Amino acid sequence: MDKEAVSVMSVKKPKQSRRGGSRDGLFQRNRWWWIDYYDADGKRHRKKAAPDYATAKLIYRKTMTAIARGEVLGIREEGLGLKEFVERIWWPRTKLRLASAWAERVKTWCLDRVVLPRFGVCKLSGLRKDAIEAWAAERMGLVGASTFNKELWTIKNICKCAVDWGYMKASPAQGVRRLKEPNGRVRYLTSEERETLLREANPTLRLYIVAALQTGARRSELIRFRWKDVDFKTRTVRFVNTKNGDSRSVPMTDTLNDLIQGFARPLDPEASVFPEREPLALTRSFARLIRRLGLKNLSFHDLRHDAASTLAMAGVPLRTVAEILGHRDMRMTTRYAHLSPQHLREAIKVLDRQ
Image (cartoon, rainbow, N blue to C red; front, side, top):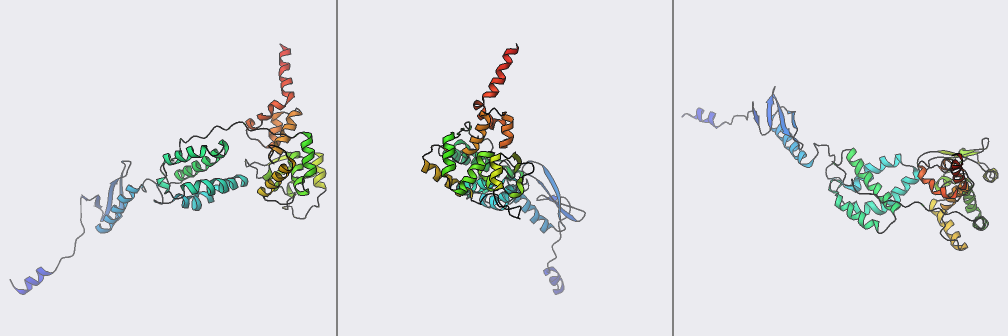
């Protein structure tokens, strides 16, 4: 064999692209390589991948790896931690659709103190129903039904949104039951208690007490009460951004009208009607007053109950009481039914017509 022949044989020929047929989940069509695979649900997919075999093979391998992790089925950001999901994705979207008072409760009391300390280290995809049920069993013995249900709502909503937005396949909180909440207590003031509160309260706290007794408004509603929400022509006040997200108007009593008329009205309609106070500061101030006076089982929220109880005992229809308080659910108002003498008298008259 001559040297020229040996030289030709020693030269490596360039690697040719594979053609025709199907190999390793790939096939060629019109000079392009396609990938051919089945997802975890058994559905077959054929997708155009790359003009050369090596790149198409790489795409195929990555696709099969993604199937194993669930990404092809819609699971986004595999390995995402629950804490990161909550802080970066869930909370920024969720807080926009919650009333401000409820958003504050969820963030401060449910997320920061309960949910994230317990589940924040978990991967979102690694959260399991048994872990949530174990937490629920422990928590039920530590807090009341209402508090537990609020915390469980937070966990359930995180999981629901993760499923809806493609970060989980199914909610592990589904089927974890809420606790039945007892009927809310009704604590109203005697005339002596009412007079004592108004007499002994400091000037700022007294303003809030009078307003609560005269409107049935919540603490948060009074703190957010602005001059733009006062209408002296129609003698009404308006509460916006309430707990249930609705706004409502309440007629002013003579007492409330005289009180507000005595304030110096600022030029800024966004200014607060009452001296600005933090919610917890107002609650603590009221609690100190109650302890000093020796009054039992009384909170600032009970002033709202007192307004509703006074209306019910005066024979005001419960539907009207519900509108004044801003109740969406009449079951919240029927707790005052036993205080209303008139609704029973009107009902029993039906028997005389037989």
